[in-house]
Length: 238
Ligand code: DX5
Ligand code: ZN
Image (cartoon, rainbow, N blue to C red; front, top):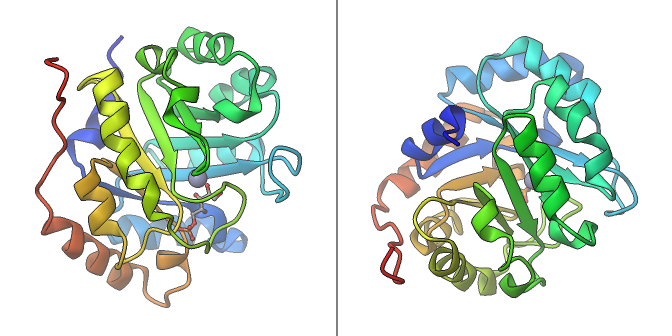
């Protein structure tokens, strides 16, 4: 299956996706306007249910509200138990990519199949402490792997360097097609090593939203990544 919006993001990579966790929800339209003026090409939306993670954020209503305000791709990161029950809701709300956590399900396959049935690319996420072996069997069925560089739940945590080696591991298992995404603690000090390790989509929360000027923050992060041209190539002959 070809997934135009995911392909477009990847082709622009390494690409920064703002995580909207810390944005000003009181004026979403203004926030999106500022970010799009600063050149962002997609949004990362963090859904937390207070069960899979202790934090609670928002659900499909906010995804739908953002959908009405932008044409850019919406990369929805589900940090919730029982994601299968809600795939249709998030697809209806306008998600372009749906990613769920391997730790949240007994069997990821029905979730992947449900996302595909809605014509969307499926992403599988693992927390920083979860080994790649946990998702090895289903990686070939996914279009995206989200390697968390923290334990999911809160913005503003510290980047865990040991995660860097997982990008090549996933590439070796899943080949050149799968899109690699990193999330957690990405800032001007850590973004370059994440991109050099093979992350193509770089999720950034506090390093944008805790700054007064989003464009300045994005320009600075982009200039660091712009210096990084190395891309991980498959080593398994694919
Ligand atoms: C955390 C979320 C992240 C988070 C990133 O569980 O998935 O997307 O908002 O925020 P920073 O960049 O501050 O770590
Ligand atoms: Zn996220």
